[in-house]
Image 1 (cartoon, rainbow, N blue to C red):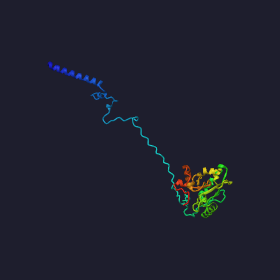
Image 2: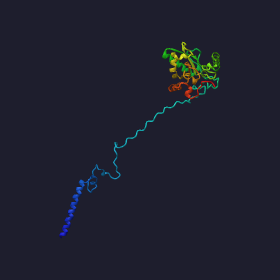
Image 3: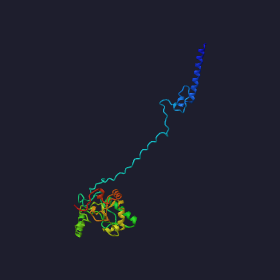
Image 4: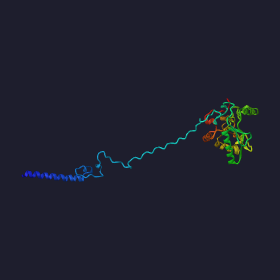
Length: 281
């Protein structure tokens, strides 16, 4: 073997040995992402390099965004249906009768009149539903106050209203009569839904001072609970066309009476958006 051959073999051995040393040093000191790619290197289980392509890590629950809560639906309160009953049909308990809205027909007679079993001046008749409400109203008043009420006047037929109106005209003249007594065919009493109430024993009967009596005060504050409306308030003469009558109550049903009380509206004309009726046309 010549020197040249020995030298070449020795040099090759040195290069191989040196490369192994260098490779070992690089594997020891290089970053894990690189070192693990080297031949013979042991992968680091915690290193991202251990994941194969397409094998993405699953995010933890903490990393996931919290689901957005669905908004709570707003409960809609149904509006009071002002057209649920007729304002024109005389058989409707919501019929509006005033100087501009006469009954149709003018000589209308209610179909279900009954005698109201309460104390009275003149024997009272009303439509059955209104009669039952009056009985409950009178009983509640006596239970709460220990006092008593009586019916002064209730249903009046067309012929009776003719006589009542003519008597008022004869006594006070038509101009005055028209502020206190309805002309025939325009009276709420003819509907069988209106009642004039007085104290028992009598005190301020059919007089404005009735409003200041215990009976008048209680009725003004509580009649709505039984479906009644104080039909001719003191401050609404320009709307109703009649002077203050704290004794005159009109049955309209508990639902409508409650709605009007809640809204603070005191006349049927205003509540239903009808024209005021201060005079006859």
